[in-house]
Length: 386
Image 1 (cartoon, one colour):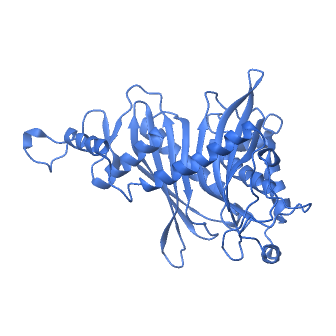
Image 2 (tube, one colour):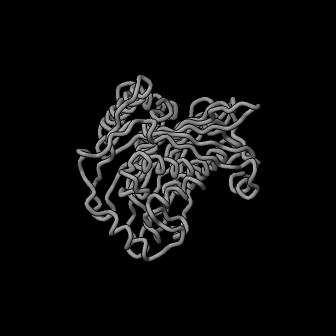
Image 3 (cartoon, helix red, strand yellow):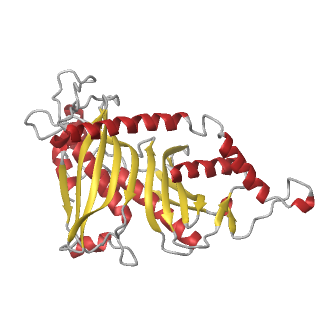
């Protein structure tokens, strides 16, 4: 892809795996500032990039992006967005005339990917556009749009917001990014929106069910669901009965695993985040399809947190579960763990959240049985309603 080639040029790496890559990075990433003092100030338009995915003219590429029912492989688009976000960040952080960037930029969070009302074709060119729309000291919010010609008009078919962070790969510490200054009312609005997004993320983190109990309405909801599963004739709370047209959450789990090979490495010899997103999405979609017995439509992806870099040679365990349903829609959570087979220790690398629509009038509603499942249900509900 054009974006990946540009990225490799900026970082100064070669497509092949070479021992000299690490030597180059060790010499390149020295004396990286931790403060923004003296760094060049950029506007939003300075980081604007666009790339074309030529599906309309490249049959080989078409086969890579086409799924089994001749639709688009959405996981491929997620991979491209991850690469494209990195390219935009490197564009924002250019310093002087040197094409090569002194920073390591990684994905910290996929804040939200939202699809429009158009069906994306695997046989027509796709255009990606985007900018850096907010920066902190070492973090950057990247907003991207996906476009495709539909009925002779270029339409926006998807919008994505990623949070990226700059790092010094030698020290592992943070690295300062170029400051951002709004140029005109339109850019000022985008910067304000980015700052508001940061505050919203901080607020959501404080309200996490891992830190605070459910609120009153959520507690009432869980109790109501519990009462629906009690057989009042038995006069006991131990006998549980599944209501009509429902399914126990414990029966909605689907898992897989992958060995992380060098083929899937990113520019810094870790496993590419876009690859992880594609694998998680395809597992989540498969789970939703098996649960609903349909080909569900992807509606929203949000709050994909990258907690740990995935090393080459580790084993990636993915576990998906239907955690919330409402009407025809399903909220699917995919939990990712990595294991070094020489040690055997499991560590969480990611949590993924997907919303799918079965378009069924009679979709089975998922019901939690345990307290842990009830918390997953509420967490799924929060993501669904966000």
